[in-house]
Image 1 (cartoon, one colour):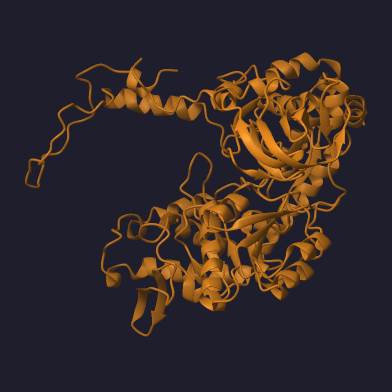
Image 2 (tube, one colour; image 1 turned 90 degrees about the horizontal axis):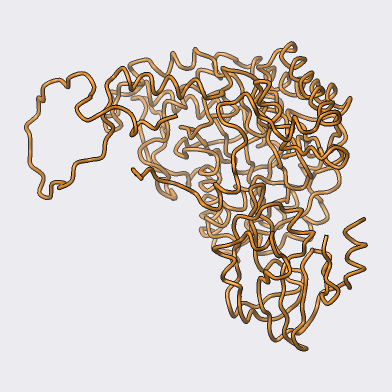
Length: 124
Length: 475
């Protein structure tokens, strides 16, 4: 399982890639996609939506179940990765390339872990 | 197997139609293209449906322990009653005085099912469970709107609930507040207390809950919701465990739905028809969908409640399903109804005990009418998942239990044998389960490749969900 060192991770299994102090890309981790199984649908947020750290901002659907994706930061959706609507399998195939949303005006970050901390967290 | 459209040839058709005895008319805008209908003879049509029927697995073919679905046997006397010409050969627009027997069925069913559930009034319009949930929530909404109090917009749903509960709440215009379950799978009373407030419209709950456990705090739970000004909705999916033993009305519920097609032994699976009858306490009867049946000295009549939320379905719901349910209730009677519930609980505990020899139970026992196993440890040890075991069961002629539900249990299998299975059948089925546990350890590939004896092998569920083909086209 892959845990890129340049990313931060939440305990809800989302990753954060900071672009500058108030902007970041977010997505789901390799661990999350392997637990969820093959994803068949994503319900993306809308540009301009205000999101809060620790609260659901999007949901993904596998053959088994629909699961909420929790926002790792508080901010405003600047852009969504619309290609995932047609190709949700990218979340499985390339979880760190398949960013879900770009979030701007970030006012707070949730509790985030470094790669090695997150790796230890999921192995528990 | 070929589709009906791919069979036959132009010119083949059924037996001759009788001569037309009504005047022919020409439509203002007739179709220009002929309808694309199958061209098959009656022989070929019959064979087609027989071939389809042979590929189906129903409760008449074998064990069908689909948790939370109550796949009990449907006694044939129900079918006999529903086929009586006075019930089957009527028209929904017939004058009331010519269908008094049918109205009596609705009235009598309402009375008996209200007695079983502790309710005061009932509608049979909803076509199935989720439709019943939607109807019940509209009653709650009408009640709050009528009282003109603070805006009550939130419905509380525990995280173990059926997915239809939050979906119905959203459909009815509420927002959903999810509350966590405790370690025993029951409602976390402190979390509930923290969640209620002046915006609480109500709570939706099943009891016994989706992990097959009777919530011992039920009176406190309904009291907390009532004290906050909300109403309590009972999802009747699991009524089979307690029917005739305890009543949702006595637990503090104000509105319920029953799945007549589960608990009251009318056929289901494969799309219906079902019946999601909705019962309510006296103070909500004024909002029930119309028409409802009332009785006076002249007989039975249809009437519309004073502040009715309106129709939920055309005419009176799936009437013949109600006939079957009434036949079931009258056949079992006052002693038989609770006896059925107690045997459902006994059977589930019997299987639970036998399977505990090798499988890990998700919650400490005993259970009610169903139980949940977690196969996470089996998967970790052997690589065989709940899905693999389920597919292995198919090769033994057994319908798999409910899989991957409830979502709070990893690698879940949820088993509900119902009261209509014999001890011998359960012994045999448990033998298969225990055998498959050994196969998982000794030869896991057998399970990874299962099923091998079914008409189709393992289906590409992901492909079907990502690229659904919903319509037949010639290409």
